[in-house]
Image 1 (cartoon, rainbow, N blue to C red):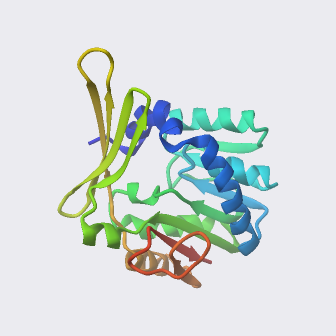
Image 2: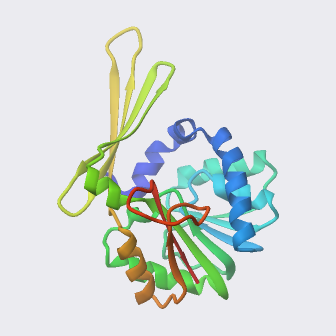
Length: 245
């Protein structure tokens, strides 16, 4: 299995096509606008920013944004997107524990980035560090997949997408204490089909584990929601969203 850095460095060239950046940016502009209406913020840290879809959407809404990602290749594409959309974003090559010379109103970790942590014990350390990056009244919002449902239903297939001559299959292998996340790309040319498999390890954090990690890190007002609209959470939701201040 690849480290998160190597996994996303290798994936970067295909990532925007796989996640449909253009249509996703349009949707996330609305999602981020609704989030800012609930948690008014002028400055935002986007942890695990990837190719910058949330960072760009937030900057276009007037926020001072710092985007952090472990993959230099993903950040290169994020910078290109920000320039193309005339969005002023400060990008930092780093991990969840990187020091930042900033204190923000809002810290986001969206799109299932947090499960790339190496252990459950690391949650408290990361959440403690993130408190230092925020103003005293700041908020942390973490969005991950609802692993309670995934583990209960043993859902292996995440997504299958067809793109001209390529088929991209995202799927899980269930390990003893973690998940192996796989992306299989099958390319069909005139000859024999070719395939490429990339895999990395994920920690399937539950809502209870997120709340416990935040409590141990000193966060006080901690809530779990089922989506970024802050609707109620239950085990049938696709997502699990932690909000803390």
